[in-house]
Length: 475
Image (cartoon, rainbow, N blue to C red):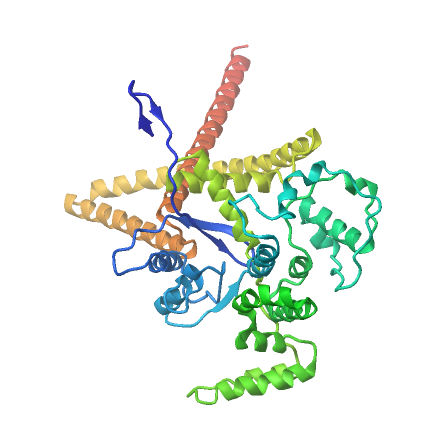
């Protein structure tokens, strides 16, 4: 906030880097941070890796981490000074690099358009004759004499469970590509606008998105490139080569081990045993893959879940100020979306409110039960405390003070043990820990309030019964 000449505060926009972190394969938001400024000769990638390592230590995940995902930028993927390389050095072991295939799929097409149509004039402008028409394409009339462009590879069939999770742009783009190949554009598609989507490999990656599918997409990309004219091959070969991260030998061996073909297993297993021949402590359990395919963990080869979190962080940065405020903003919206996934009509709101009211009634019943038990516990504790006070009065003053000190120290040790258990079970950053403490305190206050209300109600009932009994005796 910046004050003006009258002292009134106004928000000011500043540009800063935010690194978003997700937990995979669920894709849920984990944390985001602003990297520290590097001190020469340190590089920015080292500071990002250091912050990621501290986050892993906070969540006690330094040993369980097996896959690193990210974009194919030099800051991330540099073999010597990239973020992934620095993080591996800090962990003292190698990790599996899963580079977003959707990003590497964009590079060949982007540079092909540049070589054929001409360079861009800005981040959204074009200089060529074809791409310059993109701004007015929605105002053009449909050409009924258009002829289809058959040939090439067909689009992959999209299962229903993937289709329902696609955006409208993606679904319409799929139908339009089919229309271009067949030469028939349905009337309902002629008036629909479409966003930016890359085809063919895009849908292949969306359907086949597991780690073992990465090398197969590289082969498909090479097969499509070989069918193109020489000019196209010259324009895209370099970018296909630098984006072929899943052509690495470990990715190919992983794909062969997960294959349903026994021939692939017979080729992959001996190669891995040869690589492990020099190790002092070998592992022969890999020979089981000769009979049964290897079950690859369900990690994805694209980072669209992280891209969604990046968008959420950007929206939070435009709405609130500060690290803790942005984190709370993101988590609150995630909780709201989990509570109400869709809000298209009043019925959705009523269904959500009814479900929330039923859950709240269950919570109230549980709270009432806990309040009654706490009331009984309070009564028993008051009796025991009065008995203890009588015993302490009979004891010498020194013995009484020693007993109270021992009881307080035992309570402190029990609280410390409970705190250590909770922190080890749910390690969180400092801000999240403070929020958890605040929520726990609020829950205790609510329980105490409900207990007090139940005690008051019980006292009123006893008073009414006593008044009724006195009235009956007087009559």
